[in-house]
Length: 35
Length: 345
Image (cartoon, rainbow over all chains, first blue to last red; front, side, top):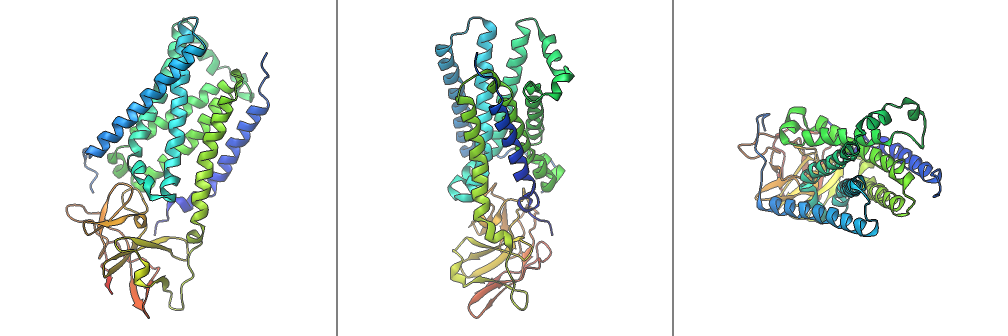
């Protein structure tokens, strides 16, 4: 019996979201101030 | 349904939806360019093209954000289902908006006669070791490639050719593309433009996508945990009247697999919750014209045996149901697709 995608993939997405948000936060923190 | 070519099923609603979609995109891009032009009049042709790059890029990002919000919104409230039904055209249009963004970027180099600079930027391997200074255009190109693959395989021909499982997995890559786009903007334009608008747009969009998915997932937690079957392995659904007429109640087998228990007047039947088309949530649909109808794209099945009405050939797995002490129960062991199993109460 096939399982729904929603169940099978669930564990991947939180890590992906945290990774993207973390990199975004770093990009925001380390951006050069205006000259 | 066969692998044979099948023409797109156009109808009046789709024409109206597509017209609104195209008009909204055109208005957004025109308004963006006019406002930007007024606030920062371009000094030369490259500066004018740059406004176009920003307009189409912003539009593509916002369209991606909306597309990714449609799924959880439809799970939270059925009134959003029409958006989901037409999501495919939204996605294909997003690819074209992103493609124009990329094409304008190439044009920006071309009008200055320095296209080799673009190749130089992309092949300066030392930059790949940096974080700030990483060739962010590569992230955009990767996201555009994903969007292209999805737009190219968006037709039902490819859905049938690849099978619903493979097709849906491929199309889940949109989430990866979205992540790439967020970073493309974060280490790209956000580094050059010191305005709160860009981080605000990224946080707002990304937050909406993540937040809506979390809320939708949280609401479905009890279902995902699965039911505990009784002594004989049957799952209690409830009295027949607890199932809305022409609609379903969704219960979960011990492993979390969902079962849609429909009631059509005095007939009750249980089907897998996965539509044979795109694994859509059958149990969130209704019985229309005597057939269980998937809320996503309208695929239909007979309640009594899970078979699509002729000339279609799709079949869903069914489940045994019984009425015991005035309560409907369903057995979590699926029957072969197309097995008659509905009962009259």
